[in-house]
Length: 395
Ligand SMILES: Cc1ncc(COP(=O)(O)O)c(C=O)c1O
Image 1 (tube, rainbow, N blue to C red):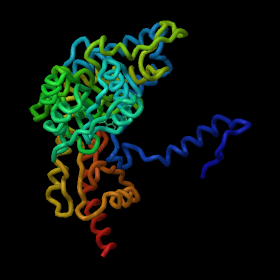
Image 2: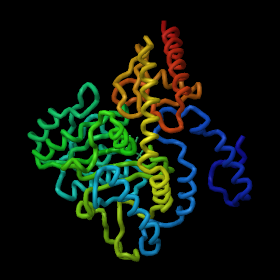
Image 3: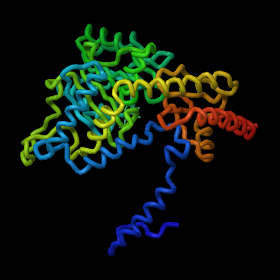
C-alpha cells in the first residue's frame, strides 16, 4: 500500500518517508537476477560499472574544459570501442543509447550529402525515427528468408535511387541475425555509397565470436564503406543505462556533431544532446579495462553456447519452431498455431517476460548475461504448456 499520494505536494515529505516509498515501489519491479526477464536487452550491470558510474555521475561530459578527466576517459573509451571494431584513429561519442547513436549517424550521413537512407526491413525502429526526424528519404530494402539484408534488392534499389547511406544491422532486434557487411561494403563502394552499421546489440559479441571461429561477417571499419557503427555498452557491454556508443571512421566524418554554443567554456558543444553524465563513460571505461578482449570473448562464447543449447531443445519440440538459427544470443520461437500475443499475455501473467519478435509472429528471448540455461530450459516447458492450454481453450 503506497503512503504518498500522486501529485506535486505543497508541503514536502520527510526524506525517510520518500525513501521508504521508493523501496516499496522497488519491491514491485521485476529484477534481472530474481525474476524471469528473458526478452529484454537490458541486464544487471556489472558491480564495478555501477561503482564507476556513481563516481563520475555528477560530471558533465558536455563540458570538457571543466571536467577534463571525464573527457579523457571518453576519448579512451572511443579508441577502445574502435579497436573492437577494427578501426584506427576513430572518433565518436558516448550517447544515451542505440537510438541516439543511430539518429546521430543518419544525421552525419545527411550532413555529408547522403540523403537517401537504405533501410532493410529488419532495421531497428530508431532508424525510421531518424529518417522521419531528419526529413531524409527512407528506401525500404528486402530481407532474405534468414532475415539478412537482401543484397540483390539492395543493389537494385541503389541503381534506381542513387548514392546514399545503407543501414545494416549486426544483431537484429527481432532475430539477432547479422547482415553481410562485407559484401554490402563492396556493393556500396560500387555505388558511391556509405554504410552505417547498427551493432547496438551485436557490437560487444560478434567480433569476439568471429575470433573464436563462429561464421560471422566482419562488421567494422575494415570494410571500406563503413563510416559509422553503433555499439551499446548498456546492452552486452555490462554498463548501466544510459550508455550507448557511436564510433565513426574519422574526426572529419564526426565534425557535423560539433555545434557552436557561445555560453559553454569551449564555445562549442558535442552531440545531439546537451548535458551528459560522466557516469556512462566511466562505467564503460571500467568494463573495457576489467574484461579486456579475453573477458568479453569468454562471455560471448558462454552466451552463444547457452543460446545454441536452447535452440537445440526447441528443435526437439513438436509444438515449437525456431524461426531462424541464432547467430547471436537471440531466439525467435514460433509457437505453432498460436498467436504470439496470446502466449506473451499468459507468460507475463506467470512471471516470465519474453518479448515479441516484431517482424514475424514469434516469441523473442534474449540470452543476456543474467539469464540462466536452466531458467531457459524451464521456459521451454512453460511455452509448451501455455500452447497446450491456449489450444484446449480454443477448441
Ligand atoms: C539493433 C538495435 N539498435 C538500436 C536499438 C536502440 O537502443 P536503445 O533502446 O538503447 O536506444 C536497439 C534496441 O533494442 C536495437 O536492438
